[in-house]
Image (cartoon, rainbow, N blue to C red; front, side, top):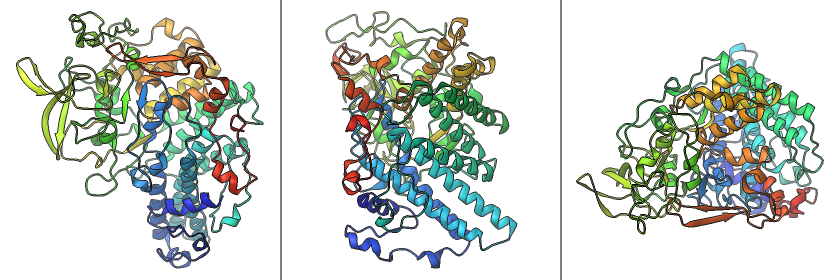
Length: 615
């Protein structure tokens, strides 16, 4: 584990206090750091604890704020690469070199594993030293504030361990500061049930100690602790109900699943009922221009702009500094094209997402779009249901226009922090002059889309900030997600319930969809399909789909059985694109359900066992 612990030291250099010097010489690990105040000098009062907590936030944030890459593990988002760099945590180093395709990714997150443990060590540093401060004061108000700091740090630690078990199952559990490699050189993996209980304890402590209202953007209050505790129990219920045969020693147990679903529902219900939280702009759909016109966009689009950072829907988010801070997010760079501050469009919608957007007139799915190539078919732009006819997208869920752009949809181009005016997206017509209604435009320029669509979600519609200077606070827990998780948990135990259906309908309403039909709520299976549908549309490109497919054991349902035909993706012009899971052997499916323990760590520690599919 020497490399693991060394990387913890490197990881910490981005926070306000380093735990280890950032050197590549191993003998330095045993020396006192010279680049920070010593613990015995620094840890004198609650201000020191608060400063250290901010360091923990700055170390944990980069483990979650590019989770949209993980959407590439699903079937609706293509991640062709990342803007994450090597050696610069602010620029997504933890996500660097990950495989964000729908298959073959389980061996590509060795670096992420190590950096997650960096987050563990940073939070342990705050917890351990703040607890020592607690022993030195009897002042009730000071003690309360220190306990709150411990609560926030334990929430962060719980989030990190939750991510670890979601990917690797059994993982080493460390709940103290590691000062020397020898302390963990022979550590074994801890059974997932034990780690889960420790995470539960962290979330429960956080709930007990945190304030009802979060102190500010990027911080956490009681609703966040409850929501994460509920989510942990929902995942546990899913694993227990659907099984996790790739994790050695894990037993399927439906009675345990029912208990976990029930407890998850109770936590989600408390979040929904007890804190006055509401959806952004009351969950109303807002107004929307006709196809092609971008001046008025629905409320769902505005939810993902910096102006919404402080909204109550964001139960917990991670703040970014914006221009001039070296702490900006890179959503513009990752989601938009060259026409938008020379961005790179690393993340784009797949063609298949378009058919998931239902009709506002009926609430049902529209007839499937028909791919047509306008360069070889003169009627492609006017044929009903043609994928390149803008009128084919009429009367769709408002979240469609908010989330993606199809042919002749416009957005604001930007260069050198100035607006270049509207740019229409026309697939395979990059940076070309085009006349629309007598006005000449230059088309959207991107080398990142191979589906016929690009994202509008997360792309700012105003100039003045560079592609890497965003100040949107990335949501790690949204109220809409809590609504859907509550509906899933209650449905799994009790079947369709009126309050759960009402919550799903509230999510649908923001897309201007009518309520679920009777057929959509007629059985647990039908309601689960409706919940899954809303998770696909509501949470697209937020990093949930791959985790959902694994916890539901749905890879075979989505991609077909082992050694089958798999899925051929295509684009709006009818061209075949990527193929996934064709003639894929069962072992690959198993490896996609559980990630590989990094071989480098096992080379240094023979007590670290490997997950079965990777032996």
